[in-house]
Length: 218
Image (cartoon, rainbow, N blue to C red; front, side, top):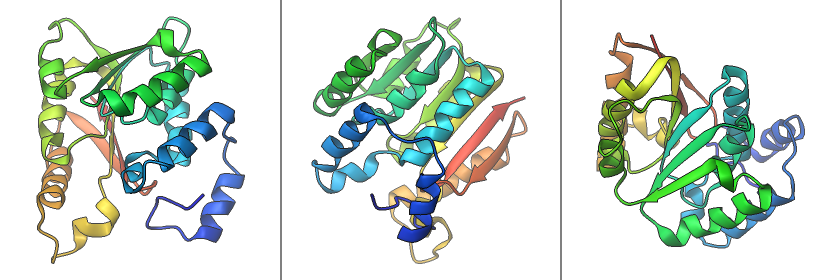
């Protein structure tokens, strides 16, 4: 398994994985099936990131989580497995084809009863939620130009001391490359600046995989 992180070589990544909770058959099969999709499989989070996210769910006692961008369901699998019996994960995505792969894995893992999948533009789904609906944790891993909009919708719905996790915030190092001015890179830089200046939250960027921001609502 090649490292997704641009900061790791194969040897160091192998060492890292050897000291991380091993993947079971369901997770391994899901990663393999996703890899068969070709280059688009790069949208899947790294196994070590999934392990970290599971740990955060368990450590914080999160019960209600929302995920913006589900792809083939590996991140949702990691989150749902760490939820308590009465926990709930709301997944928002636009692709029936890709999420169908995740559905099969969730069922095999016995967590499908904890997961609700809503298909359609995530901003529409978020804005359609009841004003009283709140979450303990959120994970953003979708179209980069809308990161700021997702954050704006999610933060008011986050409980105090709740966490928002945001993927791809280092964008393979492009965020510090002055030659990169494509829309995704520009959007991620703007989002990172937005969060860093927001006094409603405490945040840090972890050099995990392609960069993972942890945001705590004060």
